[in-house]
Length: 322
Image 1 (cartoon, one colour):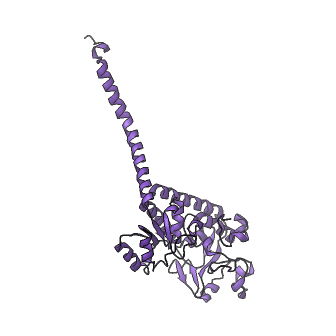
Image 2: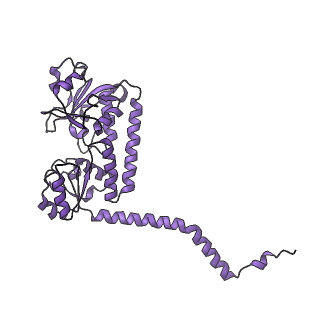
Image 3: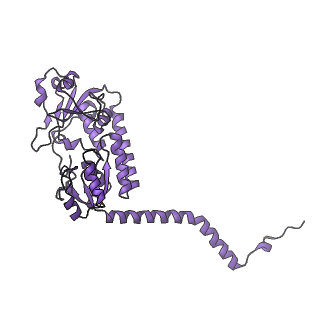
């Protein structure tokens, strides 16, 4: 049987060109389509960001927006939002459960970032009725904080960025945990409120930071992430480290000193000079700074592993956070 030569199957030049173009389109199309999708998503994100006029009632929300590079879209903040410094000069719109609706409307706010709470539900419903989107973040627990970060990213068109930030937080927290691995856990009392006494309990980001830095929360068996406790219960648990972040007033006592707790000189924390008074902004606002909080907690619990804490690290935060 005679074989036909390749020339017998040759196509006219015009048909060859058409065939080559079809092959190129087939090979290159997926890459072009993917690039087109990326460009479209970027354009959509820019459009969403440009249209946003955000009011922030949640201190954690303000820091999350800073992490997502959207702080310039914030036009107002709640009375308790003090950080980052960029928000200091913005209009104040009241407490999270009683926002000034008239002022909010006058500022053309279209997204309110607040915290999930029973007390704030009525105010949130009023905002929604006038067409303002309300995002209530669950910042009571560590996992809730990270989930809220990702949810905020979806709402503001920065989903991938938020996911990457959360992944980074988890990795850096794990690095701190590795440094503290093997150390004997010291019992830690973390005070978030006085008169009455409130302590950090299980599930809170503070509880997670304590455990990450090689500590044991003395109220890990409490009923809620932030628990009302008796002074007797706090004392009888014999904390080896006391961290008091209950006073947010300007000029409040800061540093490493017994203070109020010194009257119970039998407490290991008092006897071993491990009572710290810290500006609450340093460690009570969950968000992108969680790994830094864990590092700081390491210095308070295990200075032999993390180094000694400086007075500046316990005092008020400044624009150039030390």
